[in-house]
Image (cartoon, rainbow over all chains, first blue to last red; front, side, top):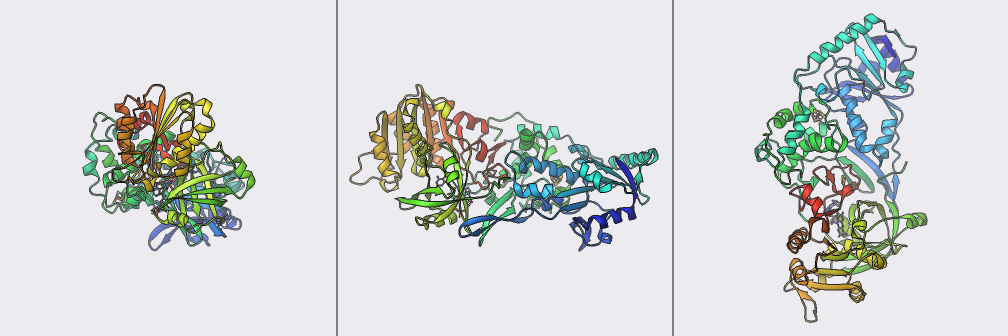
Length: 337
Length: 279
Ligand SMILES: Cc1cc2nc3c(=O)[nH]c(=O)nc-3n(C[C@H](O)[C@H](O)[C@H](O)COP(=O)(O)OP(=O)(O)OC[C@H]3O[C@@H](n4cnc5c(N)ncnc54)[C@H](O)[C@@H]3O)c2cc1C
Ligand code: SF4
Ligand code: SF4
Ligand code: FES
């Protein structure tokens, strides 16, 4: 169901929802755009390029206590947060959660992730101004995609928004607010959508990445391609789909932390042996995980095209170019490792 | 919903000092129901946890054919293993698992076996040996070749004697040159060369090996030279592991997660995995 709401009606809606939900929304924080819990609706940004950090952290926090030990017994931390609502998430970030679901909600469900997912409603805001570094349309998403969202809001640029429900929970939130859209509203929505999609200039061919990665696994190309990378891990941490973690004990707590495949310790064993002992291997792992292994294991690429990795890389590595330049060559024996 | 990271409380029942830096711990789960229902197979591993110190993966060195307890054999190597070595009988630890695949027991059924172990790599093989000895009718003749650096480094010393005396079992022990002492009656030489010397025929046989990566590498080559087909050779791989559940992302070789799809592989599968499988 689609409804048309004015901005003040949406603000009223948020204010009402704040009574029952912790509302997380994009705000300006020290000149950066960040999702964080809000207390007033006037904190919300309504027009913004995507946030620096994805909403991943609300489901897989950078640091999360799993257990507290008492007399050697592990007591699970109650994973369930208060009912939450993420307001204004971009469609690419919503899609990233569907990809993380494949890891954390497979047959061995991760209860910490599961409860946060269950307790969180996702209200999306269509992108009207995709950046030069965005390419969500190449990865099955789009600036107006509803996938993974409970509601999608699309600004018609005159202070009114088409609000489209995409789940029963979403429908419940918007029921009775504003008015039902008419054909004219829908036409305008379509136009905004086409305009936005038109701004995404570069279309990638992810299937060609897969092929190149498989065939070029043993290529000397990687010796040079990795040189520029300083292994800082920023691309991994800021990526909405990177999910690797470490588990370690701090005093009497067992804690899960984000980890990254760019660090030597990620795979280094106590014996000193390290299966990915050079930067080349670690650099390659990221590309292969996203555009090769995950695709083979789950049928989709582990990327939503948000562009954060290339916007934030301190040495300006553009992964699209790294992948594009893999030379086509025949597979070397054992080239799948 | 089950909490997949929850370590289940277990009590140390016995500690056997195998060598200077290797101990075998016998554990039972505090929850009797869990102890009864804890089903596992040789080749699988657990995450062993000491609250406030950390977790580390160890293979199950005991066999499900001997219920009532589980055993792990651990070598002192770092933080968690040091803490494990400081434990005393009666202490409480945490166990979650079992994880991973197993020694492909169906594929071993009806076959002759040669088990080739080095150092503490005998631990997972011990599980298999006990299993096979307890289910003797399902398997053919067994050759066990086991080596360590020195006589002091051999684990399961008492049990080795028992195995040697079991009908249908040929036990060959070896130590690296210089590792022998006056009483030593076994072989002297590296495990792969002793394997070649004993020369168990590949006819209707499976070869299962576990030990340091360098030993495994040479055992694989030697076995291939002796006429073993890649699908007749089985080994276990070691990787850094944290979750054991295919989520933390670090133990993969290519698209294969060793914690779930392994740690046991045939040589044939390893060849398909790619070049860098042995660290
Ligand atoms: C499937 C499997 C089975 C194993 N079976 C045995 C066994 O039966 N007996 C035995 O003595 N050892 C075994 N190991 C090796 C053992 O896990 C490491 O020696 C141990 O993790 C070292 O932990 P630490 O805290 O003492 O070392 P530290 O170097 O202080 O800490 C390293 C931490 O990294 C993590 N880690 C996970 N996997 C490894 C790994 N493979 N190597 C190093 N660190 C790792 C652990 O959380 C560990 O606490 C096995 C490893 C694997 C992967
Ligand atoms: S790989 Fe880059 S573009 Fe793709 S989802 Fe991650 S940060 Fe976004
Ligand atoms: S952000 Fe750039 S430099 Fe840092 S690890 Fe990623 S690719 Fe390398
Ligand atoms: S140990 Fe975490 S993915 Fe294998």
